[in-house]
Image 1 (cartoon, rainbow, N blue to C red):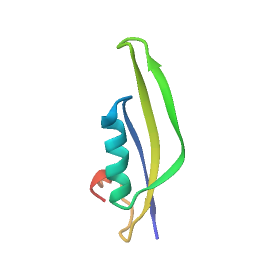
Image 2: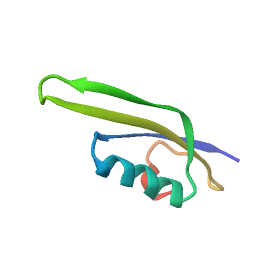
Image 3: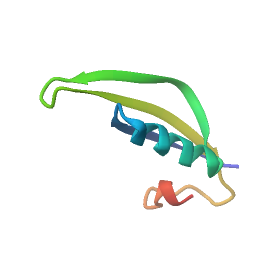
Image 4: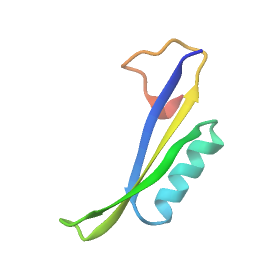
Length: 68
């Protein structure tokens, strides 16, 4: 079964938590630890979390990962 990967990113607000929670509710699994970085140009912290998901279809580079 193919596995697909996404990197979710967002400013460090509740929007990031909602984005990750939405992915988890759709069957995605956390992959590794979250990452944080300061965006000096905008003066905000940014968050990132990798997620993976096993899918029944064959992987294709044109697929919309968020719709899987």
